[in-house]
Length: 281
Image 1 (cartoon, rainbow, N blue to C red):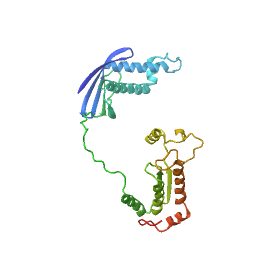
Image 2: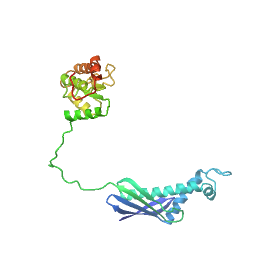
Image 3: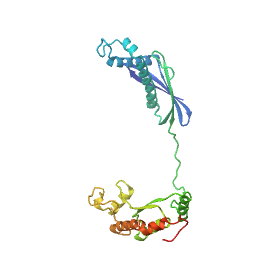
Image 4: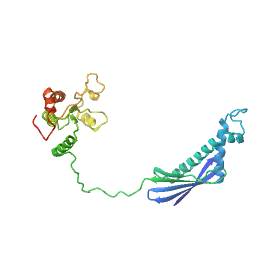
């Protein structure tokens, strides 16, 4: 348990707010703030004074009504505001003095807060755990492959077919590993699997992304690197120079993919009996 005593000024008076931090666990704490009878009374007087300043009562100008009359007229509002201020003060002072790194407030116990009596506020919080990071240099790490195999792709497609689901496929083209031939093979793959719809979209180098930064460093961006503002740019045209073809070849190959996949022959082929394994184009 850790204790703090913090000086604070309320309504022109200087008081001491007593704060205790009690360990519930390594990551959960109880912050207990105790305000004396004088502190609570001063806070209540400050709230009443604020209401008096703006209260409008018949026969009195704003700020001139007697405090007792204002308290009677606005008793509920004053009580709510007073309790909120006491609770907020306890929590804020507890955080400031304890310097806890709070992640979440779990519970709040205010007790019976009344003017002229001592008030104890208990706030249960979860805090960020602290630990010593051990040395990790030289630790051997095995990284499992993340790219799916052809068999895994076939199994996923078969699962969709098993439930009678139509397949919408979206492909991005223009990767540094792409060639004209590999992009055209993507169309053959889509036709073999009889996808209901397929899109063949050219990669877009969006600013602020590693892809954009890499192309800029290599001097491969077109349209001055601001393709989205260039009036000559058209949607799904190459905005960069690919690694294994020209920008125009990439654009024209993407157009060819769309024409091929959406041709009458392709639609007829894909409308035949449901997909069962690989079939010829």
